[in-house]
Length: 464
Image 1 (tube, rainbow, N blue to C red):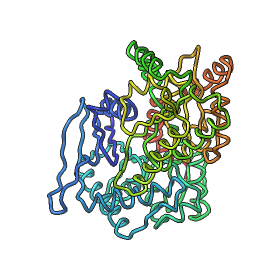
Image 2: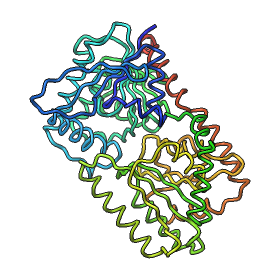
Image 3: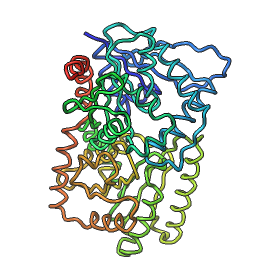
Image 4: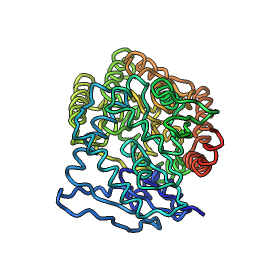
């Protein structure tokens, strides 16, 4: 049986992930099953003069191979090109991109170094699964070193329309690099269509069948693989005696009839300032919600060394303070804002105990919080999901209340609709939503992608 090699920018800390669940656990399960190795950055930054070596270890019966980044690598590859260029551009925010020739060089250099280190660990029949935007050129660098294994790539973030992708530095180089993969996976049909359009309109690619594209002398499988969650595990977490106790304690303390919950990393792509403005408008337009509804917003910090993130934090803290100052009272705080990570079992209980889940990113690859909120609900008395139509999850979760996150009035009106929705309609919507979440769960995502990757060489050759 072929080994599975997972490559990501950062290797997960499986000691923590086993407790929190999610994607890391799903990949770890596959690695254990296929005698695999997880390769990537170990999270440390060393001096530019420090020797760079591979650290081989084992976490929860999963072999890991990690390397550090030098300070220069971190600044240019990680902060520079990955998060100051690719991340904002792929989220349709060209205005936030910071283009620097050094960062492009650093991005190439680190991918070359990763490829060289990884190649020393590979066996001829390994299957290699590369994750996300940090590592787009990795397969091309591996091919340059003579590696001929099946290599797949999954993009966890959106892929933008052609006009936006053209604004990224050296788009043809990135596209050529992507065609070194045997399988290119996207979150949604929209992302897949955007990539196909770019390839056909700007690189003369030819579509061959439903899932193959020929360009640059290669044929590659290109399709969507919507990512999901472990539905049963999350549902059970939300219904343990501990979760029930947490919900009851929260209800006693909050003294309100309804709670709206939002859980997002503190990121400009999540639409958090607009979300708070929409909540303020809800209180203005529907004054019956004053002292009756609370917005619980949990936003743990992320990438605080990128300037745009510190700015969004200041704006969010200012808005939450202004709303609480304008509408709050001695016995009611309209916005409860938490700027730290919260344990996964606490989130599950919080989702179950909240009457509305508010997920309004301006652009998102998928957004698993939406699926977790659905999974946590009590089928007899479920909450209502209000979801941005620009989240990848909206392609699947049509029975949510879909909103334009830029339109504060539409979001406010949708929140009022959710808060006043009758139980019968809530049940019908939840029944349809949970069926869709189960259909595209994390196991389905993992197995569907790996099956496509294992057979990719044969299918791509037969499509020519």
